[in-house]
Length: 295
Image (cartoon, rainbow, N blue to C red):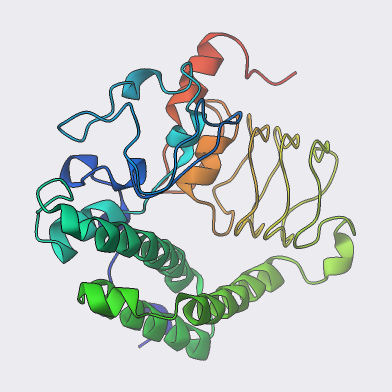
């Protein structure tokens, strides 16, 4: 049996359980995290305090107009399903309002669970992309280990060494990335030398460059122009895509692209996305106003 068949036949959590269900969450993203007044948030909010726009039923009072009201950061955030996992799983459906003394533990658990679910999201993609049997087994073992903690108790979640786990996941994701990119390009010498992990490419016009197979993990791509670009086998793990121009780009084969990255970028209805990711709502609105049409 092939590695991919083994992975598919093993009961590893899929991405369906890693999508937010706000109706089953106690607005943990609106309470646990803090933010400062900036281009992404209209006000200052300390961590551990409810947003002033939060309703008694844990709904957002300005959900349908977050961007015009100055809360763009809220439209970018994704908990990868950690909110409902903590609210309904770890705390049995009893909110921090019902049990005020659970507040600090619930918020702390949410911060850890969000990281666990994000790692599971990346590992789910790595499972589909792994070629080498040993690498595939590493992905499988990590997925199962993280899933076990995520399904455990509050104590187990809070006692976890998240930093060490991040290091292990980062290495296996890099291994899978190298396999996939090596299969696409025989030599990295064909790539522009600026295309490196962590590169500062803010505001750069990347349209003339051949990007396929590039490693842009952690790169700063703020307001970079990628219109019409083919990003097949481009590693975008942790890349900052805020206001990046993605109109008409082909992202179907991009590595480790997430919904929050798309939500922070600019795109159009002809931007081609990987399966499981959605066209952000503001892309529709922008195109209707004629603002995202390629020049």
